[in-house]
Image 1 (spheres, rainbow, N blue to C red):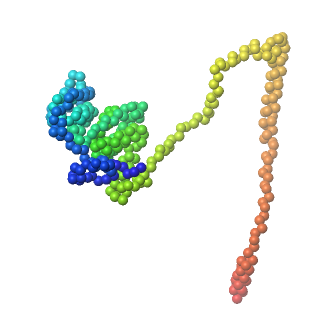
Image 2 (cartoon, one colour; image 1 turned 120 degrees about the vertical axis):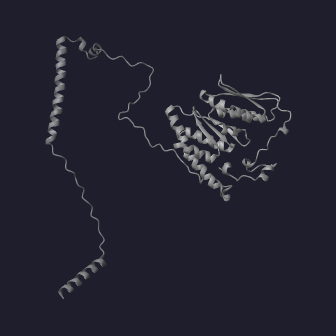
Image 3 (cartoon, one colour; image 1 turned 90 degrees about the vertical axis):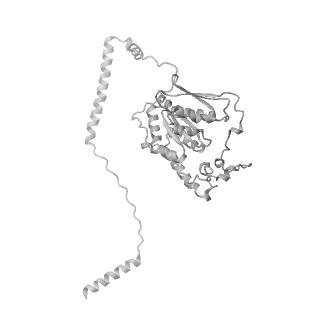
Length: 351
């Protein structure tokens, strides 16, 4: 992976931005988009284009208050804006005097952002050429409601600190509202905002991406690392499953599937027919039953006797294996030194 284009090169000066090269561009983010002026399209547009969006009921009072400002902001582009409080919709449409064809797309983004609770002071910035908008739908990324709420709160952070860090690193305005995340800023910053939001809803903590962006910002200050791979500097985070699912003590083994039903249990008559008791007389049946009971009692008595006799049996003594003696090598020199030392001590004691 080459270095990130977001942090690849410093911004170009005003003189450099005016010169648009004809050949391949090394850093397209540093180029300024040529300004589109009314002189470039004096005849206006031929067809009328319009976009409409719905807004919730609680936004009606605020939109009524700022709607004159919205119309004033769209007036230089000759775009008509209408607010329908009965249907709860906002509509923008071009006129014959509209000279910028792309301004209707910008106006569409403006009313979408205001419908998603973005204040007018921030939403009107989308009319600039360097600023774009992105509305990320996060409601369908997580199935369970409680899990969705936790991950959305994780994106905001305590007292909005995580969201503030994302805004500082990407130079974008980010607002989490309901099932959507509205982002407003430069194109390259919006790419990182979308990546962070989608990975957060997929159970990847946003602090990982924030750390990676901070490291890239520091690496961009070093001109020697301009054309090098930055993967060795970025942290490599792996998922760790700390909790293991508890296994039951007794596991039920699944039987092999068979399309046939289980066999019917044998009745008492079937058992008597199989053993031959069905054809005996009543006296013979009673005698056979008593004989069976006596045999069963004799077996149980033998088991009890054997259990009692276990107490009087001596335990088995453990057999010790004879240890093999190892022939230790005797150090003769050390033995001589020990004898001499003992003799010297004896002489000192005698004197």
